[in-house]
Image (cartoon, rainbow, N blue to C red; front, side, top):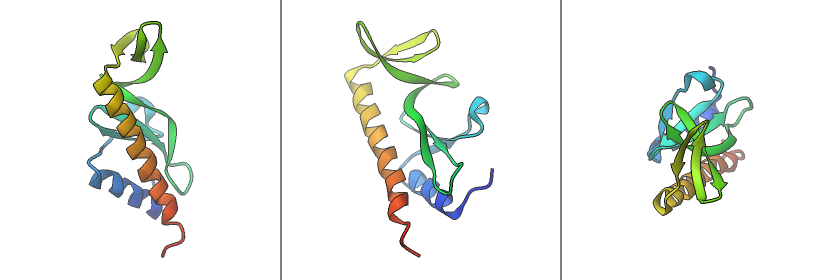
Length: 113
C-alpha cells in the first residue's frame, strides 16, 4: 500500500499519541489503529486518511461494534457480546474523540508547507 506524505504524517501523529498500527487480514484495504483495546479503521483511498465506519472494540481477531440492546449497551461481533461497562464506555468516547482530533489535525496542515 502506497501512502501519501499527508497520510504518513497522520500515522506518525497516531503513533506519538500512543496508538499502535495493526493489520487485519480480512480488512487489508484499511489501516487499523488501536489503543486500549479500541480499534479504528482508516481509509487511505484519498490524499488524506478518513475514518471508515465507526470505532469498535477488539474481540479476538475481529472488531465488535457498540450497539444498544434491551439491557443496555454492548460491543457485538456476530454471536459474541461484551457488556459495555461505564469504564469501557468512557474509554470508547475518549478513543473516538482522540481519533477524530488526530484526523482533523491533518486538515489543519493543509495550508502549511
